[in-house]
Length: 367
Length: 235
View 1 (cartoon, rainbow over the protein chains, first blue to last red):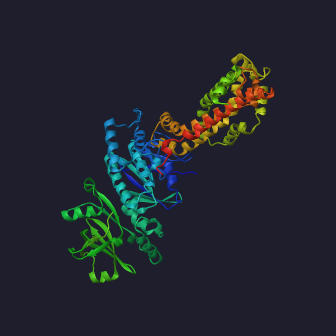
View 2: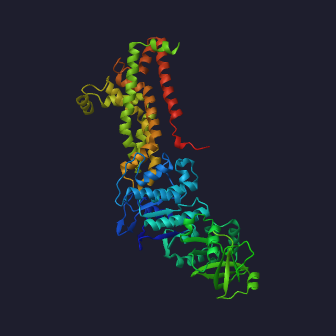
């Protein structure tokens, strides 16, 4: 095994996603970059430092794998404290980039709160579920003080809403503590909503790399295997399977919305949207959020609806109309972003939509 | 025969044998742990071509007749070899018929019982938790003290108990090296053999029961209490 890879960080706080099918060498690549794979030749440039040694504790990155091997003889809290360098006996080990004890305390408390692991602190890893273990493992990696997170399917055991929640919290923490992330996932949706840059690898080779918004259409177009979209409900999976048999127009597989609340939405509607997204925490609502929405979960109306159960309505503009054999995919512009909506041919005829029409997007489900 | 009568009936020579057996077992375990812990760690992290050879050598005392071991040891340490001369210079006496002699013998004899659990424990730790600790940036002494040793604790206790109990049961090797000198090399198992030879079955019974009890209790305590609570789930 001889993996050679080179990362050069462009910005001080970057989020790179690595996408590839199973067996494409993602984990090998990540473990090599983390310096945990013997006989792997890697070169990591991070904050103007060059790293290429094996099992080096001065390596800037902390690797978090899907199996989340916690220290089983320690409780969750002790796991976190040990990683932070503060042991249960009270001593600390020195770190080059150590922050003050007070900062560490508040960071620990903040992470426990954001990752919702307060009720797990006294438990031992053996009694945790797979998803709980992954949350603790991620928290432990964050508190250790390193500035580069290497996440290898690190949230794969979490259900989709919880995973979205964790990614949002993680994005917030990374921004606050200037932590960079390289993330591996077989889920394009997960990468798309978190990462600023995407790398596509296959058979241990880099196929393509670039900014997420440029990479995403290409990656979606390359998808013929619906298994990459395993997070949405079973009904949609079924629908995708059917679509693949006919003529796949991959852009319709998902619509990505980057919610930045702007003046186009009035106060009442904005509040309702966040409630719908099950974001009860008021603090979260003030942050920038990202959601994944299935195109079929977005309906279209020509005027705002008043007597309906759909309360998430946002004004938008029709940009592109894609005619499929059994449906129409509307690409709508919303505050400078693009949203896909899948409507039936009958609806299309009834609405008689044209490019540049003003419409209302109605969201059936969020988060 | 009640327990009380068992102990009052023991002769002075029996007590000597018991004291000798316990101190032999104690020193054997202590020395094996001092040598075995670092050695097991090195072997657990070594994946080279010589690993099967090392594992074979460690496992050999399990299958070899004790007489083979004993024969090689007394040959190697006989006073006309350089090893025997070195031994006499350092220890100040002959290898055979001495307590230090049977101590060396029993260290080799019990080696696999201590080393194998330690190597197994360290091997499993060095893959997962050890790598986690490295990637979290913990220095070596820190992860050895707070991660490796605590996680290996049940195996260290197992290794010590097995080493101790196994030393209690040594016979052939000790007889070959140490002979049968009361107060110096006559351990309980040899004293027992002595009684049987001289047809003193009551005395033999007492020592046999004593060894049985010792072994039973140490193994029972091991299996009963050597389960850390963090390994128990709520089920």
